[in-house]
Length: 355
Image 1 (tube, rainbow, N blue to C red):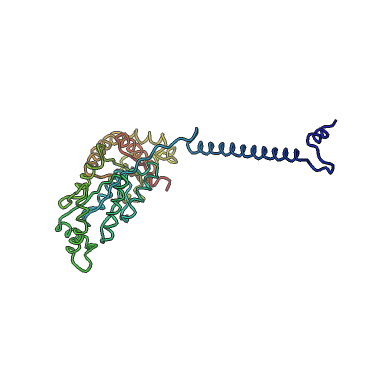
Image 2: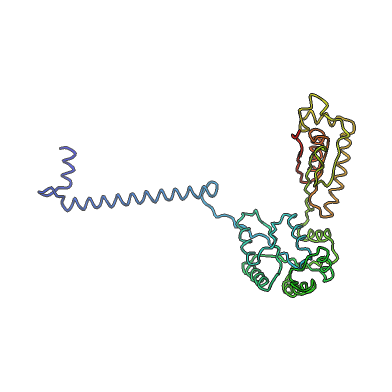
């Protein structure tokens, strides 16, 4: 008997060739089994794909719960116009804070949420706000209440100054007070004090800047927010050629033209001060190493003074005739000395390649 005959005998048909009830029932069972098998295969594929997706997100291995990211630290800078809000903002920015100036108070919670989503890249936020109307102040109060409800810690810095000091400052820059309208400067100051009275009472830190200069204000803020770390100093060491002009942003200028010029040595002329042979030629000249040592000592003293005075950035311009050989070699050595002294240093060769 053939295989086809056996299959026909398993499910006999009637005299018209129509499948019998047993054959129909068996076909239904096979269809149900097929559907169940297909569904099971789909579920397995979905599970495997889900595991692969989890692996991609976590960098390998099964998906694990991510560690909670802490809310960013928040400082709100406010106070009287002319009392030093901009100086305070620049100080915190130099200390590594993410500073947002003139942010509408209603957007402060949103700014905190964005910082929390940065995966720690924005860990400290400082927001500068001022009060130019009652509605503005009401929004600030609501935002602070919202932050308190969410358990987000915030500190409020309030900058204060006497009426006499504020009047002198506005008159010195010949600008009106933002709230004086058609009145006098003292009228605007009085209106602002009235609007800020409640905020001043809630401030965590009140600084009276009436008798402070810029450096003294920065020192106070450093003491509050820099912790035990010494304020960071960043230096740019820039080589240049005198024939192209002095750098306009130079704080200190070093003249290397007292050293013989490698330009007049034919085998060194095509190279720059970055070349080992050129650098060796420069520092083998009488006085070159002594000059480097003495000037590095001088920079050590200057850097300490800059830190005490709150200066965060310094540009040291090192010049020779064309800005190609001597100044480049000396800049590289000075930058290395500053970096070894704990100063964050960037080296720029302004005129190299201009000849």
